[in-house]
Image (cartoon, rainbow, N blue to C red):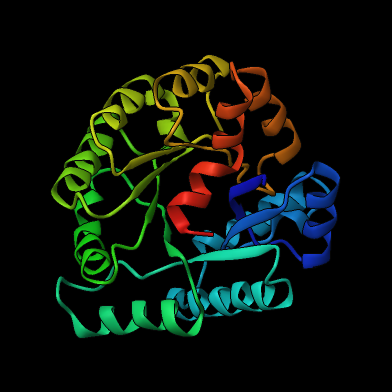
Length: 259
């Protein structure tokens, strides 16, 4: 089974299904989105759409709307999609409202994990209440964006949280960006750390990750920002056996999420 472990909702959702069929993808782990760049046809339209991220009037309301959009997509194609649910970073540790939010994600929306969390540099500690809640609630996996604008120091702070909450699986999204080498080295040291390959900075980063941590490297595309078929080809190009190919392209995330 080939599983894209990280993609966003695109509209209409039927276009995503067609892409999956063409690429040979059996299942996709979907994440919500506040914007839809797939609707743009040129530079100006793309900039306008992405600019909504900086001009959102009510971020919480927009997040709830995006979650409903995600939930609808999964319900329409439950055999092809599972989801990760976003969580506001405004809750303090042990806040009952945080636990209520996560319980709704899991019980009502059937989400398999929490994320994506995209933070600015110096903000990693905002995740600790999420880690604590995920640990208390069935050790839910957490997906964290580790590309720009995070610094190496931020990624190292994330790793300290990963070590502190060793029962919580943590997926390092986008391989740490330009800090891919140090990120791979950190992940090797924690069995609950996983590496998402979407937006890999160089093919050597992908090759090294597969060699060093084949059991915790996850095929992903970040669709519509990345092309799933090309990432599949890249994985196939840099694996040394069919067993490893199968693990990276689907087996690892299948085991992690118990799909």
